[in-house]
Amino acid sequence: MQQMTVQQLHAVLSEPDGAKPLLLDVREPWEWQLARIEGSQHIPMGDIPARAQELDKTQSTVVICHHGVRSLQVVAFLQRFGFDQLHNLQGGIDAWSRQVDPAVALY
Image (cartoon, rainbow, N blue to C red; front, side):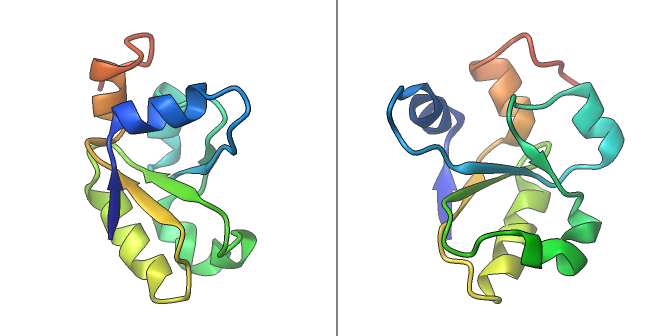
């Protein structure tokens, strides 16, 4: 399973001409409303089994949650269905807020 640090994600998102990964946020709706990375797509973890067909199996995707635990589970689940361009964001949105963008709320 591939992991991505918040610094690595920030570098990828900062490249002006680089291909941007899909940012898949799997937290609960109230969490996503409170704090999110701009441009992320929100599908709560519990909805992933029913909505996985909405995702492109070949697109580079970074899965995000609060601390990186739920996203790790979603990555493992999606890999069983042939998704192979997945990264788990280590430390989740909490690490993003603390290390990259302090304007994103901590909770």
